[in-house]
Image (cartoon, rainbow, N blue to C red; front, side):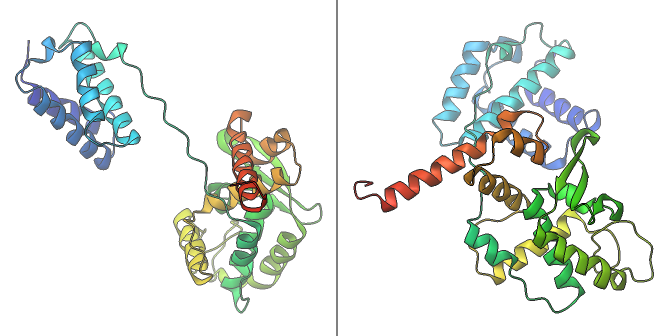
Length: 296
């Protein structure tokens, strides 16, 4: 039986790269975690490490200032490593099976206030790019699309006569979402007055085009929204998903029920949608503490 732990770790990392196709970043993170594990157990052989030893090691990394995500990654790494050792018949018993993954607290998604959304959407319109950006942001806030859904929209997915957009989301599930008046107005302007000049003599069915006349990418949209936010002096950390979260939170605030929001967002499980009730509760608490005479 092979007991050289460093050699086993290197075999495992090669397995992740070649057989599992893990990214270099993930492999490097696992390598750091496992070499720390090796250092802690430098006087032991792999088949002599039991569940209690592993619990002691996890207790030790807890006491060494790692955050919850890092601890969770360490445990996940060890679970994968020991599963590999079992598959390769290096060990007969997997001592990590008895150790559960920690439950990470789900952070509330970042959202913009209504004033911040209005500020973000108040774009100076002076060329085809600004009209495209205005149409994209208005549609995203109006419909709560995922960024992947937004950039994959084709002209035929937009029905301006019926004020709807057809989305093919996760698992190719179709959903139909209403388009708001502002989004419709600027979609019409972009499609009928500006889009053709962006094609650069190319043919494309994609609704939103980049400056080369090709399909807008997720990264391209992310750069656009970041640049606009910076120009508006919006300090919150912003991503394309922020408008989706803001859409859902504002709907809930004004009385929409969770089932409706679930359908609009395309969530398969309503528990995913329920996080927006926590956002609203946090906002209510903040307003109470700010404005109620006995709030503080």
